Amino acid sequence: MNNFMRAVGVKPPGLLAESLFVAQREIPKLKENECLVKVIYSALNRADIMQRKGLYPPPPGESDILGLEAVGFVAETSSSNSKWAKKTRVMALVAGGGNAEYVSVNEKNLMKIPDWMSFRDAAAITEAWLTAFQLLYWVSSVTKQEPLRKNIQDSTFLVHAGASGVGTSLIQMLKKVLNVKTVFATVGSKEKQEFLEKNLNVTKAFNYKDKEEENFHEMINNLTNKKGVDVIFDCVGASYWQKNTECLAVDGEWIFYGTMGGVKVEGDLLGRILRKRIQLKGTTLRTRSIDYKHDLMRDFENKILNQFNNYNLNVLIDKEFDLEEIANAHKHMESNANIGKIILKVSNESDLKQEL
Ligand SMILES: NC(=O)c1ccc[n+]([C@@H]2O[C@H](COP(=O)([O-])OP(=O)(O)OC[C@H]3O[C@@H](n4cnc5c(N)ncnc54)[C@H](OP(=O)(O)O)[C@@H]3O)[C@@H](O)[C@H]2O)c1
Image (cartoon, rainbow, N blue to C red):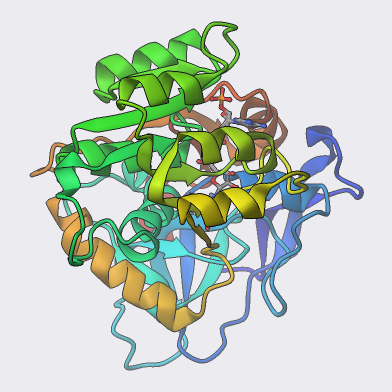
């Protein structure tokens, strides 16, 4: 193995996707309790676009290379008694460095790819499904047994950006794992609306770009006997705050995890939160500790990953790009065209087997 690898670089200020290129970078040096993963696939996340533009820097001490996830083989371990044997097929959750031929990752933040799952499918799992799992099982209280809590199947949900990587994972867990009856979603096209209603069985997907459905909050109130929904999963933020507070039920949970519609709010937000006893909970996965991510991954493996086929869950890959096509991959994400995940092919599986 020479000391250099291919990795995505950014020419500042990174406003356009064309500022991305594939650079030669040093292969990461391992710190204590880390594994070096030879990457076969990585995947795109919205955070990559913000990082490219200089709006979302990596946490201190983390790689400045883009990419929050990667799948591949363990190529090297920092300790001789690591629980990860060389060549083990793994999914890596990282705070940076995934869009490269090699990535270093704390051994606690790896998941074994189930034997029946291909590298390609695994590429679409890590960030989207762990985020959705965290929102549903760890941040929201819907799966917790609390006195006076409604039966989960009868609770009602609204998932914004329903066709996104995270949104499609959330919807599948709600419908197929938790057997929830009423799940609404918002989307920005007719194609996405049809996909969610026909393929993911959502109760109603509202196309917010359609004049007749832009006031989805009113339609939701009509469809729920004026009660509103019990939980909103919101990655949009400012542009939806009024609609959210209008169609959220009294004592409802507003799970806030992205800011695609902005962060600045003017108006009586606090009054509405108080009057409806709304629980507003914000969260991010990237900045969580190694141990938090470790515990989340183990819980996800037990409850979801190892039951993937039993629950009839589907891996939704929208499009695959080669690492060298990184600019086109970002453009595709920025066009808001994807349904499910955009993945990046980094190396060939066959090359890798020869190398090890
Ligand atoms: N907090 C965390 O830990 C965490 C972790 C991962 C991801 N996230 C967030 O989760 C969200 C989804 O991520 P992803 O990677 O799954 O996204 P994705 O697959 O790229 O999909 C995002 C979709 O959001 C919709 N959208 C974009 N701008 C919008 C706006 N201003 N208003 C309403 N909808 C808009 C678009 O679909 P339409 O055509 O339907 O408009 C777009 O395709 C992002 O906000 C991301 O930052 C948060």
